[in-house]
Image (cartoon, rainbow, N blue to C red; front, side, top):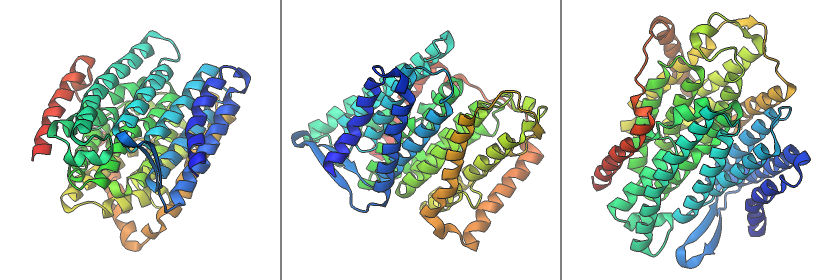
Length: 477
């Protein structure tokens, strides 16, 4: 099993560089790697025994693969597979597929790391691969968006690296468990890096512009899997260390409310989805015990929604109300919106029920408000008119990607079939009904544009400093 795991880790990087030598096989090689990851992730989900690999004993550089890793690996595989299918009949070159599969391998690496230095290396590779994918069309706007992402990411990881060195200084080890004996500044610096990288709370407000302006398949990758590399170490540390759990949960609730607060007022489809990514990452952190399942459900939904939104006749909700959507497209949009709102028969229902059951008492009010805000946000899609003609040709590869993602939402119901009780069903349906009512009566008529000042490039680093101060206070408390 150890040999197979090492081969699986190395395969995406080997294939990624081999694609340049065999450009005519680019998508086939990429798809083959993702299928292998899909099988590996599924196997780890259902294998109760964790696998541990010691790479450098003296530094506690360790890999751990368990069911939590399995959920995140499976999410990465199915989202990347959908993106490859989506791009199958496009004019994407071997460069795009090579970077996509290198990104896939780097993301998987984070999901099996159990020490801070391995996470640092993997996150830095992810930053470079993500930048190259964002800037792939080579226009000035996207090059700037990519450089903005790279600068914010590298600054955050500089803080993180200093924290990792302080952990080693205190423990002679880079292991996650070292946080228990680490100085206050180490915890604060590491958390700042991961919160920023994962798009959490105000330090993650680089995310809406980056995700909304990137090409459609890149947006799906970013929101579906890449941002989860920042929150996975937080979830792992919260499960390992009792003192870290409250901090992670607090940021989970705050992030869920912040993201949904912006999303309910947003009039641009892709920006609304980007802000809602921020909110849903908060749900993952709010209940770390079940964060893997919620991350899977969110990855499937958000990748599908970004792929669909990229093919709508407009990004403006007001314009979409005057342009009926092609009916099959609208049905796909509604299914994905139902799932993320927590409607029964889709895995979003089980994920939300399971998350709510694992909240602490002080979290319940805030997370219920966030769930209501989710229903309001996606009512914008559900109540769009349909029955129009599709002006932009939809290739079979588009529908293959959507069927793969939406089919996953139905199939993932088996993870928590115990959710289907009368008591569990009534509350989510009531929340959705109230959200729809609030949208139709209040929010549909409100035209409020929230300020974007905190999203501006010159303020992003300053916001990091404020969050760092907050983290110092929280750790000391």
